Each structure stands twice: as C-alpha cells, then as structure tokens.
Image 1 (tube, rainbow, N blue to C red):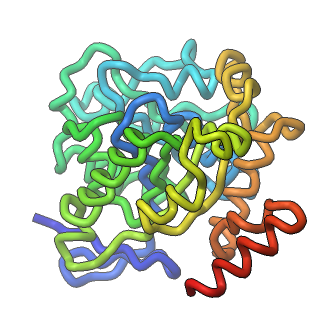
Image 2: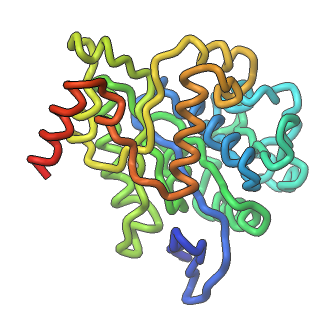
Length: 294
C-alpha cells in the first residue's frame, strides 16, 4: 500500500521513499448535509482559477451529483468519474473545461453507479494522473461518513471544513475533524493535515439574539484556523440557480467573502479576525478580552 505525505509549502510528495512534485489536494468537507460544501468547492476552485492556478474540482457525491449544476455544466457531462474508474473513458474525455475560465476543470460524479466504486486504488490513480497537470485538486465531499467522504479526504494534504452556526452542524464538523486525524494517508504517516474552517450562512444579528452560535463559540468548539465567514445571503441561492459560483457575483457579500477566503489561503495570510469586523467600543472590549486570555 502506498501512503502519501504532501509537504504543503513546496508541494513535494513522498511515495515509497521517492519525491515528486504534485498538486495541492484539498478536501472540502463537513459531516452535515446542506451546509454549503458544494457551494464552497465551486467558489473556491473558481477563485483559484481566476488567480491563474490550474484547478480541477472533483465531485465525490456518487449517486446524487450536484457540483455540475452549481458550475452550470450539467448539460455537458458525457463521461463521469465512474466511466473513468471502469475504463470506459479516460480522464481527458471526462474532464469538463469551464467556459468562463480556461484554468478550471470539473470531473462529475455518477448519478446511477454504486457508491462503492470509489475504492482507494481507483481514486489514487485519478489523483496521480491529475497531479501531473494541475496546481490544485479540490475534492468536493458528500455529507456523512460513507465511502465517498472517506475517499474524498484520504489523499488530501489540506482540509476545508464547512459548518453552519448551528449546534448540530458544529458537532458533525468536530466528528469529521476526528476522521481527518485518523482515516487519511497523512494520519497514517503520523502527520497532521492543514485544517481550515469556513463558516457559512452567518448572521451577526441572529447570533447576537441567540438564534445561532457566535463566531467565537464555533472557533472555541472546533479549535482550527478560521479561513473566512460567508454571510447569510440570497445571492448564494440565486447564483446556484444560474449555474454560476457565487464568487463571480462581485457585488454580493457572499461573493466578496469567498474572494477573501481564496486570497487568504493562497497568500498564507493570518486567519480571519473575528474581532476586526466589530464596531467601536465592542471591538475594543473584545480585542482587550482576547489579549487577556492569550
């Protein structure tokens, strides 16, 4: 069995003692369904492509398949990941090039095939071949802890954990963090993935009224670096219905939030400062409280 260990900063892969230059492999995951994983995968991959990074985003949700709808390429799917695994098509035939950005490619999931087709060796073959041509491979994980989720995270060197400001969502995300520390190739080499948190559908007004968890509570519960916060916004649904990642809507708050997330990630900037957005006296109080507890 080949175990991968990817060194994040220089994109070096060690396989059976030999070094190779490879793509960054990023899983977008969360235990709970409907939190915005596919929306995040679509916008994050589009953001990378807009920065000139050659990017491939893979839909691991065999049986359902939603990424192609969010990306607006559902009518262009001829071959999918199942066809590649079964040898009915090669990767070049199955990859769909985005019409808006030539740096972005999509590998669709199958709607009809058995989820168990996503075996480690088959996924490894796909990842290895894509690594020869792409800077980034984004693995859009299905909900839950089934085979698709396990294979989406197995070869990743980086995880983006997406959660809503709800107790059930945060609890499921915590369970996923446990899996990332035990069920991945990184974990089997004794190493830890680079983990980032993205909080979606956040409303400060509702958080202050007690309707949802506050940012500081979520950070404390999960204990990983906060990459960004996407506000609750109608523009996300509108963009999805249009088949366009919301990051392309540069006037929307959600689009701006995803652009900031990509910028922070690519440039290795410090994590999102939950106190920076607070106005006036409240910001000063929270900042002072933060310093006192650090």
